[in-house]
Length: 395
Image (cartoon, rainbow, N blue to C red; front, side):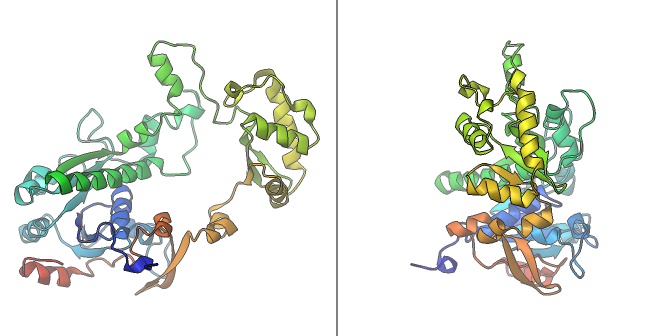
């Protein structure tokens, strides 16, 4: 069988000019780079992408930056200077894809908006990533994950409009936008291969997360349709069979005993057949289980508190019961399952030496380039790219 590294990469020959910073854009363009695209990261000197300054660091450079900027080259250009903007325009002449994450209206002031770019590259795929999109009353608000999660309802679902929710543990809005950006770019490239037509992708963190919120919005959609008494699906702690519980050693486990047959098996395993309800139906799966909830919660809590976390999980794994550990990030990184799936890989960095990064899960399907290049230092490829520009090519 032909080795993965010898296969043609899906985006081989595609050039991406990347003006994006922080998370959604860089994660998107890193994915495109993993697929074989040539990604040229344009950064504003002397600071560059603010993600370069996120703690913690390896010996010198940001760990974060090195997780979302692999397989790229960097050129430092000051977009407020006309001579640097002239170099940018020459670079854009050769771009298949442009990704930018400026606030709405900034690219027009800089002369690199979609209308300007398509005049020099009519078939360009131009992807704008913002917090709230190119239009609408929130369109001028900077796109930070916290405010997006709040305004899409994803944080309010646990409070019901009362009380103050905790900050989320995952940047769902950032990654939702990044994922839609990748999907949109791939779809636009496919269409262009048939029609020759370019595209302007208006990727909003708000739109992306909102569109992925179908589960938490089920009751709201029912209410909108006139069914005012429709209950919310119970996925946020009120269902005792879908919640987290403390263990004997002060750690925690996640309990996912939703289906009736799984619940029956668990009850039999712990010697509590009295908790099995003969009249349970599929409709009870995502409810709070009414009058039975207190008994369910008490029994589950007792079992979880009877053993240390890892001993309890081992017992459950032996019996195919989905009660799993609540890991810290350190524990997850070092977990046997993450290692078995190859989700942490080591690459050589010119400054840091050998560093770990999170693997692209599509690598095992043969869709990536194989060995990844480390995130570039600010402006590291400036001379090479400028030299190529003089000969009208940066390949």
